[in-house]
Image (cartoon, rainbow, N blue to C red; front, side):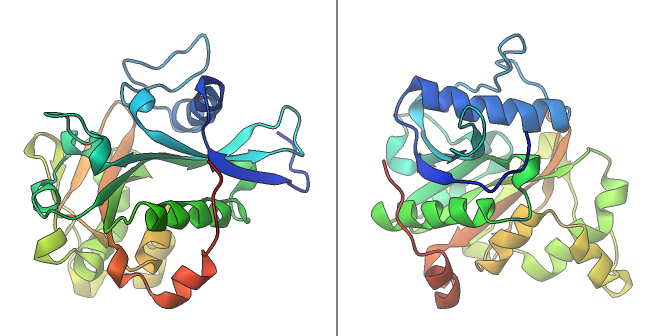
Length: 256
């Protein structure tokens, strides 16, 4: 995809065609770029699909200046009031979310977020976040959360970054979700005094750093996701703690 001057359109998916546009981008990023896979991935159609997709809202960023007006950014959004009786959030397969689900607060799970490689480091993520925070305000969300990933499943190269997150951004007890035991990975792998903080911070993925700038935290422990070839951390953002300067920066409206 050539990088032209973009003409962005940000909106929620309106129909199956829109959802497939997001799934096509997810395939390019999660499967082709990062080497992931899953039981519902449609390789012939090049779609990264999931059973929850029909039940969620999909926030999509299109570039109308590119051939075919493709989706170049996507967020999958699942509110607590969308869950059916007995149904669980996607993240609950990796993390014990009971500290959140029992809180009585209005929850929003963020999932399957990605930006096309040609649009990273530019305004695309800002556009997505404008839409995300507009959605949060519209639905009176109090806490948003979701897993965010490091590439790879070997904790060795990730140890400084994971340790930095553990020591400096661990969620307070009332927000501290915990990775499930089956694929639990400790994050305090390097003594705090031995961390090269600038180098460790540089290796934290951009999306996770963006959540931290919003005042977000990480849960207890990481979770190794072998099918997706990632090491996941759960990020939790208490909306009441988002700094006003960040609210102002991302103030916008998203069309439905």
